[in-house]
Length: 470
Image 1 (tube, rainbow, N blue to C red):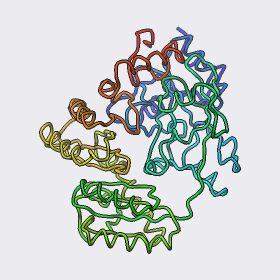
Image 2: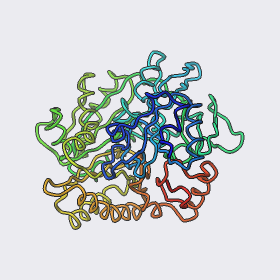
Image 3: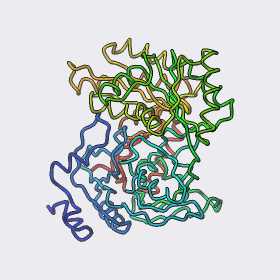
């Protein structure tokens, strides 16, 4: 039988075809620890045309393909569990064009969020989707999962900033959809189908993105509150003052404990509080601090908050943000966490978190629950930690059972089973909770149109007919 790697010898140089066990293990999974990777091969193309040839070869030979970016996803969307080929976009890292007059940038899919912002900074522009993993996540992956981040309350999701895409579909067609235009209402918006599609319809190879003017300044502050429910009226009162809120984040006392202990970050308060709210507001920094000082003194008097620290310098501002952005990495590096990413209506957050804590206490009282997330848009990150004396297999099996109850609670509160990281492998059994049978059937029909052989990221979001078996 012809070795699998030989199928691609005429497409890629030998150094772009990896089969070493270390490379397979490294590229075969994303950040989700619930699944083990078992890819057959890793390919590292550097052009759309190479990807087209690879996809055509895979479609002809019924070989599953898992597109891979920075591998920062939390749902197993970039994990190969059935001998698929990993198609890494890391060499697709060219910034093609910056149009400062139109406020747009065109890049290959392997460019990181950080590099995009560094490239457009001299023009006074930003790509406003800010993620904790911005130095490692790829823009192609951001688009494929419709990433959100801390600025959704101000700038929306990635979807709002994508003007055009180049995609290689599952049958090897190069599809260019959308343009360097803000308005184009000529027919169906095929571009939107690929945003959030998790690589199941095709491989995003290039994108044209809208950019925003860089804010004149911003001020960050950290408040302490005694319960999550207190953060809701705080949000309403901040918005009522008509300041430009660009982030409204929260995290629990346990999260503060772990980031200060393991990351050696400084707690700016003299004592611990049950919950913390990080607020970022755009505007002229000097004038804004005076306004915020007066505003939050009123909130203290009205007992909307227990305490507040307003950053006075850039260093203090970065320190405050680090308290929030270091949580996920700290939990992953110091513990074995089970992570879940959901959203509920903002008004439902207090009742949901209370019922969630009761649910976990009844199902697994030995699991420590850590809460944090984007309270300004209803997106909560749930993390519970594996006890030291429990095996990973038992922990993840038990967590999967608990997840079903958690996601049923989410849907009962009018929420979504996935706010940011997609469905992937982790949540496909729960897809029916938030999507009707009719919606799912249309999704499967669309997949057949763009990926008739069923090779693109097989097994993600939903299962399809056995013709995709590898």
